[in-house]
Amino acid sequence: MRIITGKARGMKLRTLEGLATRPTSEAAKEGMFSAIQFELHDRRVLDLFGGSGQLALEALSRGAAFAVINDASREAAAIIKENAQKTKLMPQCRILSADWKEYVRGAKGREQFDLILLDPPYAECNLDEILNALIEAELPSESAIIICESDENGIPTPIDGYRQKLHRYGKSYVSVFRRAQEEE
Image (tube, rainbow, N blue to C red; front, side, top):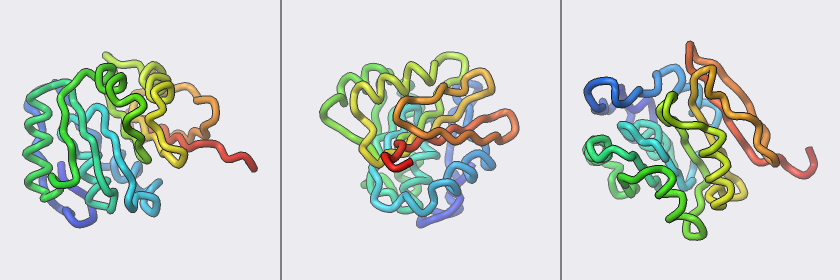
């Protein structure tokens, strides 16, 4: 697993051993970032289920301004920190280890993000619940892009006020949500 492009291009990233995390495939990651490649500059990023941190670090490498990277696992948070230091992107990161619900509750009214990356454990998390909690907490900015990775059974349902575009990469599905514009 590596950073695909940008200032940390080619840097290899470490991940947790075993089945505790499921890294995003290179094809899915490339597809995600190709869809938003010209919209990353200066964005504030939230990676709510960081794993190795690869998605947020890829966004930072490609020009995003700052990232909050969270993972419930302290071991994963330690690996994220190691990867952020190795890529020299640590100054642009805040790395946390909290349950996603706890983080969303604490961030409500205090933070907003322009890019939200959601790649939760497929079997343990419901993307509809997560999306609703994020929107209720007003964490997406007016120009936010929300990207969700899931398996076939976890594809999120459309969100009121957002357009959804669905992409498939092998057994993974990537949903890209953008706020619907008034003139559409």
